[in-house]
Image (cartoon, rainbow, N blue to C red; front, side):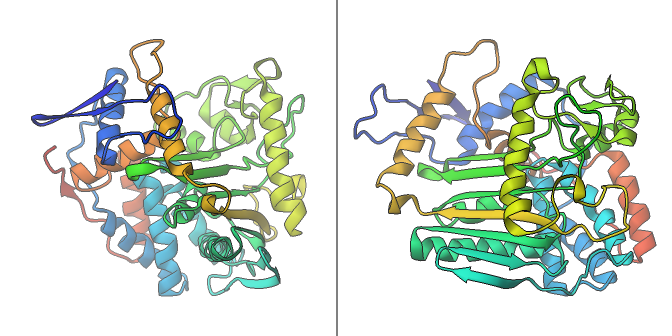
Length: 408
């Protein structure tokens, strides 16, 4: 049984032992679950000593103004800004503010057209093919998922394949768009070759992330968002910012050997498949990355695998491919949300092997968002703050404004 203590009240979430037609009583608010995650995380990490945060709307303002400075339309700049803020809000700092300068540089180098609008190339019932026209990835991604959602509401399922795109941020953002419409969401993308496939010491596939999510009862949800490499390259960049070492299952050095040095890993850009070395089942991550490549690169007609532009080069456009799906669960069977609620509770209620409770995909992100909401804004690493201040001066925009953390 999970017990969440909030003030003087206790909220209990009880699992049913037999599903049949019983409705699960789960916490009525997402905070009832994230409190448990807070407690678990506090067992293993010390709290941040910083007392200043950046309000979410201020993060959006700063990014939007920077994007507009390089010719992005105001409405499209907002889409990018809100997406990057959401990444940081959810705790995915590798894909939030950390990516702003890369987008600006790509526009300045004419590798991204900030004025481009996606267009439909083929449209057949529940399926469509979209050409992003080398526009901003977030603008293309939002357009495609909205189209998939529209088709799912008409046909029960919608699938949109996209080509001619660029880096589009976190997959989970688009999945949550479908979830807000009470649909199952799925999306994935290929990326520049960063993964050294099992038994190789040369990169040939990207991090090729994928995401699947579905809403449950009473605000609960399952939201998976993972790379098919052991880690995204942005996590190695963050380790460099913090002068930290990396786990031995993340990357190889330029000689094809396992390394724990973040700088060596970043310079080599040879990420290991999900699982790490072959003896640790890394071939499964290799297989998943190839699956994503089929759905994104092969199916859409975009560049694929080792043919995609290198991450560190700007000699040609990226021409990335994406795949978006939305599924109406009610078109298949009734009561799926209730059954998912039962499953999620049963998983969280499993006997613990140690002190930490069992959590499901999306719980950590929800705890991060609850923390931001309680404190009144996002806490950034000092190095990120310093870099953003310098970038604000370079772009001639007002730097981000900080406020004191709100009391919890």
